[in-house]
Image (tube, rainbow, N blue to C red; front, side, top):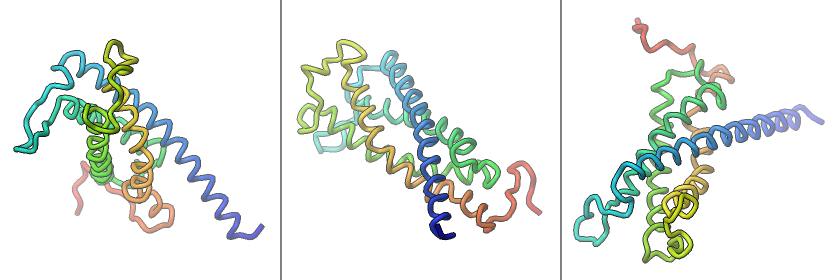
Length: 191
């Protein structure tokens, strides 16, 4: 086996390890997301109620959009910190804020796509709507909102992994290649 093939195998193994760790963090994020969603649903207005009409389109921003976004923000922060310290180990390669903003932007792109998918799964007139006779909201296991959110998370996660690896945590690759200066602490003024 040549040097190039060995390097490719090492890189492949590293990427598989990253994907596994990212998946474990993602699974914890799913739990955080769904727990937040359950709490919001339990103490807030019914998730199908309209919050505000979207102009004269006939469409409404519904509470499930708001709940999903709040759950995303809570899980996003949790996932970021775990990915930063464990998955990509970038906490020594870049400042917290420098990585968090791209991570949040990647997450928001996924959330916008997710809200569109969530609407398709929840709206009764959609061809992708979950059947109301099966998901009749009679229990947690038959709740349309929970299942829709879980489906959305499953579909958006691969996109988030690729974008975060290539953009958010790029400082790790740069540091490994010796292209990044030593990070400076946020609380120490730069001369």
